[in-house]
Amino acid sequence: MAAQRFPRNVEYLDVYVVAPNTLSNMAWRVHQPVLTNDSLKGRFERMNDVEAWTLVGAEKHRELREQQNSALLYLRDTLDSSADIQGPGLPMSAFSRIEVIDADVGASIGFFLLAVVGIAAVVAIIIALTKESCPFIYAYNEEGCHFEGEVFSGAVSPQLQRHDRLPLPHLGPVDGRYRVRVANKAREIQRTDLAELLVVDHPEGSMVLFDRDGSARTISAPVEPSGATDQSGRDAMALIASADDRAWQGDPTNDRPNADEYLDVSFPRPQGVASGRLVITARNTFWADQLYGMFLDEFGSKADALRERMQKRTAEEMRQWAREQYLPLSVSMKVGPDRWERIGQFELAGPMAWRQDVLEIDLSRATGERIELRLGSGFMFWQIDAVAFDTSTQIPVAIQRLQPDSAIDQAGRDVRASMLFEDGDLLVQPAVGDAVELSFRCPAPLAGMHRSLFLHAAGHYEILREPRSHEPDMRYLRGFKEPGALSRYSRERWNELGSLTVERAL
Image (cartoon, rainbow, N blue to C red):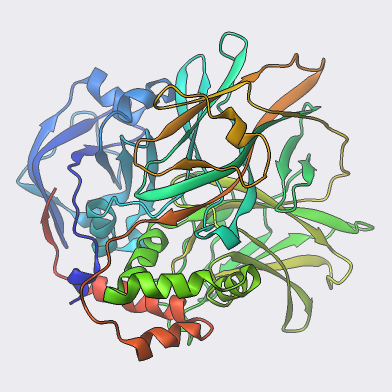
């Protein structure tokens, strides 16, 4: 029964074994790969140094390695340059992590630590490259086109339409223009009401992020936590001290009543500082993305009717339900002995790319010599790669808001008028492959300043999913009105998946 809950579509993957940090850039192509609970089997062919370099090494080869659907399994221990793989397969204990690359997106969809997620979940990730996602954003520079991330994740109905300001670190001028692509890569109807470019010039040595209210926050002296532990008491400092893909993503053995998870981080509290900024590098897990699809499948033959009923709820009712199910990443501050006060949240980021985000925090109610914060979510809903805190003085920045000069869709039509204002005149992208190329003028940078670029977008989307034929259990579905129900459901499905015997040809 557990296997029937998981999506059945399978995308072919090229499978490689790589040995990072070796002088010879060792890598093997795995022919006729079979992944089981215990091992990776197949015929291992040693790649030459040039081929291996495109997988193991340089940033300049990123586009080459992202032209095919691939699974890269990283060996746990560095091999001697003369070593080779012998025998019919390798035990899963030989690997430290796996990277899945989606050629359709043109990006790695992430690293997964095998010690954290377990092999059964890794197989699920590999065989279920379906996306319940949101508009994908690509940026151009002189080296090509780069995937940057997703916008307005979680805005799955008109009531939930929201603004997003996505950092575009790869965006650069090409022939004197900034070019951005907004693409539908999922089975959704995507509706964008506004798209503009935010050009921010700020002093060298600082960085800028926009918070959920649209305020620009400067970060000049971020510090890493002095301590970090999760709800199981595990030390997480090695995972969240820096952005290195070694992320905290909860505890698969979590037995808390609501399966909720949290990460406690603490920072030194400077004297006389009234506020500061929490900065995170995080994303939703691919598991959470798939879980939402499983949840929709529970509606069975009444999916359309139940979805229409849900669409009649107010925006606040829907946001309250999301908070009670631990979908956003909540932030609480310790304000007394065993007293935590919720002070904000980070909106859903989507699973496809790491996202830097910021939250301004009033420290007037913080107690003691440390700033103690708690980041909370549902069962395996979030990955957190880095956490920092900044108490530096805010610096004036220069912000220019640029409307697109043109917006050419996949049929060659200029749809610019639909993206100039948040006015209900929507750019509708109903099919996989729909894309719009936005072009912006490139204003001259201010002398002595660093430039950061952001796509400011507003919109929502509708997930398209074929209803299942079974009659839904209405009493069971009513249980999802209870706080924490989706998190408990996540744990149940995860445990079902972990009990499967895996023997899967890739």
